[in-house]
Length: 296
Image 1: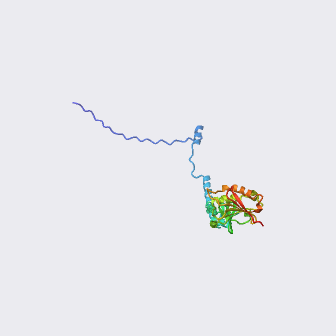
Image 2: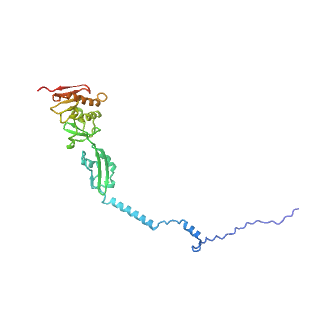
Image 3: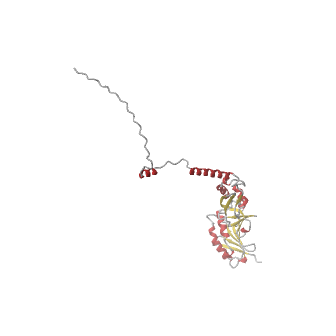
């Protein structure tokens, strides 16, 4: 028989609360070592949220913004003058109208790029720049097209540039020295400012217009040029001299490449007999003939 011994009960003991550790005591700087003082100086300090210097800077920015808005929205910086510079072929009133602005408009509200794009739509203007000159001026600088010919249609005359564009009316003394082509074709009635010549017509006209009386040994003071439906291109040395018919040119068949040879042929036909020649016919650059003036 087994003898039972006394039973021991296991009881859980409640944890003994620990006293909190005391906060670390800061050693007075007077008693701290040199290393401690150096480490204390190197420890980063949290920046102040709003130092006096920063507050002054923010206040200055606010004042500047408010002052700038007052100047822009106030009576200053409004359009009072448009400076177009010197214009040779373009009417100033047309330039001002194309800008799309009016006196009193705020300069900072003007779209300079859009205004320049509208100016280039004028036939006589090749390039344009628009800018603002404070306090009240809009500056306009344009590059106008350069004429190489005067194209005459009846009583109307037009300036032609190297691209064949009829870009302005030919008026003023500056156009007197330019060679003139009189266009008497029935199909030329549609030509006007803003229209273009056919590339071959421009090529032939510009080559013929470059010929001078000295190039062909002529005693004429000047040469004029004409194009019509009957003879095509002609060169005239005046009413009392001769007319040279160069003919009609067709792309791919009868091109402007014939002209240098035709000019040389004309010189040979005029040599020693210009006073007796009334009309010269140049079939091509090697074949030609002339009609003599009636004997007086």
